[in-house]
Length: 108
Image (cartoon, rainbow, N blue to C red):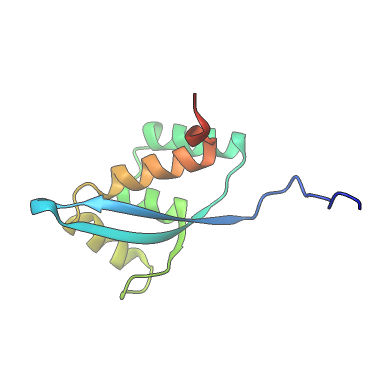
């Protein structure tokens, strides 16, 4: 039996459930579909975060293609609402995105 062939090209998007902590122990669980970036694209994205000073909303819109379990449509207005209502959302989303992209979860 032969080994199946594999592609070196990853899917253009990938899904990850994240948990955003809120006040009083509340949690918002979001099923996000992130955009895949190659090494150079990710470096440029991260450098742009620091150099250009993109807004949290713009950074999320550039990293996330969609969400799958939210009652609100994924668009600029709903992402702005997320950022306003859930203070830690931008940091949690950014950390999860970079973590998934770099394979940091494989660690040690």
